[in-house]
Length: 448
Image (cartoon, rainbow, N blue to C red; front, side):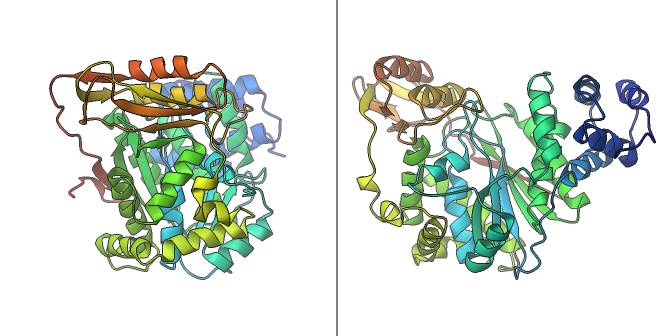
């Protein structure tokens, strides 16, 4: 039991009045809530106080530690080598985990990846993996360790034993308007990642119209908080800020993104996808002590694609986790959606802007995502972009191809997609894809 060492009302008042809580006080609140001795209404008041007044680095680390130790923290010492994972704050068309995980594992760095499902406009890695027939992400922790030891890679879903306090707190934040708190977001992310038993972590923190953080300033603050928490736990942590003002790659939707990932592993991936993939993978290889620098890690990442070892690793893990490897080797045999339709440009010009959030919601309407956490997803649904920001378009030219199994959805989704894309006469200035690196030494402008 949590005991009665502290008074919950006193602690809520302290945070309400902009005081700083000790690690023992935070641990008391989280443990009491997990053990059902602190009611929802008091935890809601505490979360709102945190939302309004923030948490300093020590408080955020204490919150993370309390959520982390509310469940099992995996011990992966029996797996040789430094274990390194990657986390993205989410976006539209973000299939990077499917590409970089086999790359990094092929380079000898163990990747213990526990991922989530999509909700709202962002896709989830688990949904993409489960679009592969037979692929299972549910497993015991013993099986998790076994696969990681055998292949240097495992792709699993969060179990009930991993950071259960975070699961409860997130559900409460969702209904109390306290989701958009940087220290609470950071604690949620890091408690799950640290529970994996990792030694180091690479973060892809996105900003822009399709990201959770809409501007670079908030994304920078989140990245700094995440890095500081990681370093507080003795885990080397490096974050990059990346632009999500348009979808990543051309494919949006679960199987469509798997298909694009296969192309990427065969050396034919979209330029933006591969630029970020190789940087993140190279950083993971460096943190995993298989390269002397990030640049060398990037070189090894490119080599793993060009020599076929990353694709071989991908096929191995698909087989190991019950997936149909034949579908990976012959993706054209996958059953297509019943309704496929072109969306064409209504005028001549340049694509100057994309409302990436709105495009993500088009994918949801087609069946590729969820509005509520219990919604089912259609693995074949989504769309393929033929044009992106900066491209020229002519009236009547195909901008995107929609895929859905929902009858009569093509016209409405096509209209929504066109409304999300701006066409003007002048070509827009290109935007930098990767803008900053954040590590324990601070924030650094990223130079290509």
